[in-house]
Length: 173
Image (cartoon, rainbow, N blue to C red; front, side, top):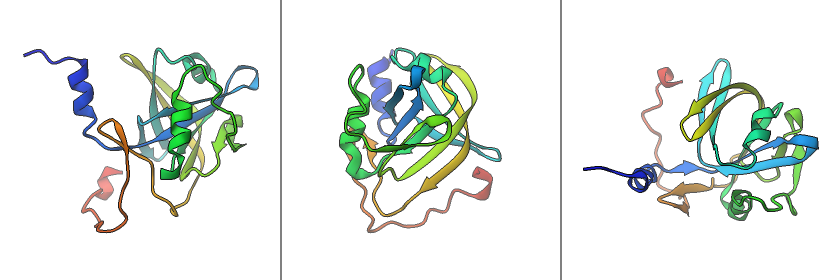
């Protein structure tokens, strides 16, 4: 039985992820940004994170040439911002409050966390390019829920009823 892209994507949607907007300073200082859920930690020493960008993304060349970028982890109240940065060829920066971080990468106001990164490596990832960034600065707050994506939709987490996991064991990091 042959399984296709649609079935593969559906199976992947069973893994809940957070939502981030990756930002950078593009050509001529124009800010670029894109919504994604493909963000992971890689290493604590050195501090490395990764994200992947579709090869069809209009801002891929600018992201590949960027001197740095920021990973902005969105809060539950930033669903509209996630949608705004998910649309190609639009004015993504209209009414977006931000400050500038490492290499002038925009840091979105209200994000739960920021990871300011210097480029570390890029890898072929099939129809995506995998970016590994070395974290040079970061900040976080814990006063709001994260924006979560699961089964193709935004979802909410309940702060009630949670329990501490038995993992990650120190070896996982």
